[in-house]
Amino acid sequence: MAYSATLIPGDGIGPEVVRATVTVLEATGVEFDWDEQQAGLSAFEATGDPLPEATLASIETTRLALKGPLTTPIGSGFRSVNVGLRQAFDCYANLRPCVTLPNTQGPFEGVDLILYRENTEGLYAGIEYFDERNQIADSINRITRKGSERIVRYAFEDAKRRGRKRLTLVHKANILKESGGLFLSIGREIAEEYPEIAFDDRIIDNMAMQLVIRPDEYDAIVTTNMFGDILSDLMAGLVGGLGVTGSANIGDDCALFEAVHGSAPDIAGKGIANPTALIRSGEMMLRYLGETAAADAVFQALRDVYGEKASLTGDLGGTATTSEFADTLAARVRQIVAA
Image (cartoon, rainbow, N blue to C red; front, side):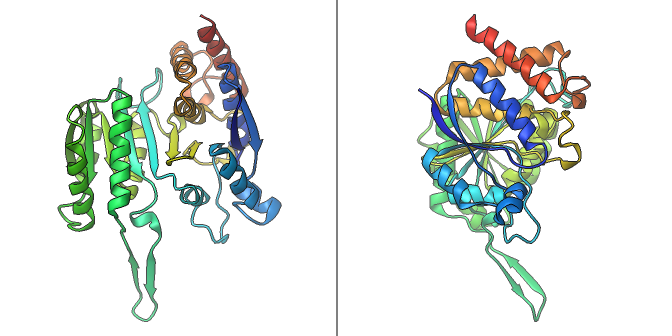
């Protein structure tokens, strides 16, 4: 059976890293029926809309999408096409695993963290007001019981599935008494339902310091939208950067998998982009679909190829092109699957 999925090549290096990722996914033997659609700057130039109705309709049907990096057109009316997609399909849980690969340039070895970020509310809900007369801008940090409960519960359930032993809730309840306090109190309530997982909390500024001093002491992290945006990039820096970390946006019945790095138009078409981030997102998609053996094969192949170092792209000191790296990785995937 082939999985129906929407495929969005995206902008800049997007088409190159998407092709590479499809090559690796198909090497697992898992079949996909891809419906290719547009979004971002390329869609705007072709249709006048950075998020065309055809793309939304495709995801509405497939409930599954793999997406390359997008450029949001200036003056299009969108704060972010990525945010628009997440909100359109209520993908409230953003997952950002950060796991060390060999021969990357992170400052630590053996990092194995996962962050669960609330994806639809907080300051990024976009509730803003501007008082022209007094030149005052206000942004509302909207935290709801529903939004907090579902991200915290998702974090506990997913952490349990992954065999994680500890979940740390990150907040600023010492200053933001109402919004931060609500998120923290709900976290403590739900933690009582999961006695098998140790639960604690950290204030955001302290957590940022802790992660760059002793990341090995942490396991899984759950937090609000803006704090998660900041911490997930910080954590990516612990393992070599955004170019080697995947991302998933998951709702109750829909999931979007994407690379979170930029579209890098300055190197587009040169065949030198590193597709690892989107490949790791593809690995996450396989796990979401229950194709665990295939996901494990991709992860092991990445570790093998990175460990051997010979076929890495230029950003990691190698000489391989985007497609050469993907072909090497796909060949290793096929070997692992056949073993």
